[in-house]
Image 1 (cartoon, each protein chain N blue to C red):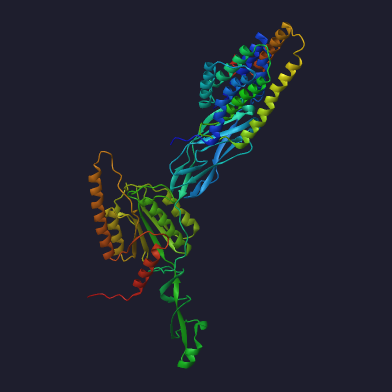
Image 2 (tube, helix red, strand yellow; image 1 turned 30 degrees about the horizontal axis):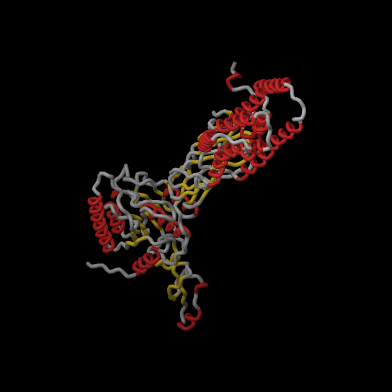
Length: 172
Length: 428
């Protein structure tokens, strides 16, 4: 017997599909209009992510949206980017909830509420970053500032690799 | 043994936030930091939530013996659950086992367990469907499983409805019990007033009659005895479609449920009941009474699988009857052997009742290669033969009744009891 998709599962998958589109279109009110082909590509990738939320294909839609914002906006920082970050996060969180079980699993209410709370808290990180960057926008930013940031991130990645080695590394 | 593996959400968060931060640093675009900051925090939290040890998962059920229609909960005990955030379970559908939720899938936060309810819809030895279990660490960063667990076996007893029968047994033969005997003894049922004999109890003297007649008279009563009941279940084949309790019944469903109801009724009033199933397994339970004996009978019924007996011919089966046993044959009477069995028991002088278990809408299951018209004609001919057998059985003094619920036998048993009390005449 083929199990039907429950209503809860349908809603979660609708968020996975629609949220990346909302993220790429959230700049439209401020004049940042993406090309139609790109919107279509994000839609197709979003559909693939909704169909297989526990597959890595879901990353492609999000990466495409981030890449467009980086290239289209330039060094500007509109408020709509915070909304776009929220939409990207909503898609990711919905895919996380959907990946907890088989296609016909109806999401648990307690788990959904937990992730809604976490989503709101995570979105605050985006808003905070926006406030910090906008507050410091009047000051001149040297190239050394960005290079220092890159070094810090790389150091964090190396540290994370040491603390959490992959299973294959332990045998060596 | 399954290991903890990085989950797809953590990989996605690492990938997107890594690319976003890389673009931000290389191109100097702060918008990328704003976009991926939540995913970066998510990835960090997921990495920090990596469990240190492997979990121990112990599946189980609350009950391993159920009646049809009853439910048990399929539980899952997870050790080292402090490192686990979400438990996800998906049970496969099994024949005649209903699940709640209907799709058999549940997920819940560790420590707030939600059990899977499993309801048995048909008697027999049933196995709960295979269950797949997956565990997720905090922030969904790591996944353990899914690991498949074989479902546990559950013994499903036929459902029976308790009722109080008023009819006396046709030929009670025991020492004590609830049925009125033909013999006089220490009972409460009035029999007669007769002259005093040596050995009569003083409290039995009827003083009014004694004074009037001038000699001592006593009140005599009938003794009370228990009865023996033999249930013979025809499991040579199963006719009709079974969709579980409360839905379409096959002939074997009717036989088992009727047998369970009759056994419960007779054991409930203190009688001794025996069971003999005509099947490959030849399930047999000797005479006995009490709740444990009833459980034994229902347990043997649940083990029954239809088919022809391997080791003995049907008409040579020893039913181990005792004098005065009431025999109830539960059969669709589509095999000549069962009719022979009924007649053989009848000729031993035992009261025999045949309960017709063939469902009204029963039809033969034929292969696709068989012409449906020929199959239908053959079935109709078989039904005509069956009607002829039933008429001959009734003519031989063996009542045939269709099962219409727990009170089906009451009227028939009452008539048999009346017939047993009539004086017998024999021709020389």
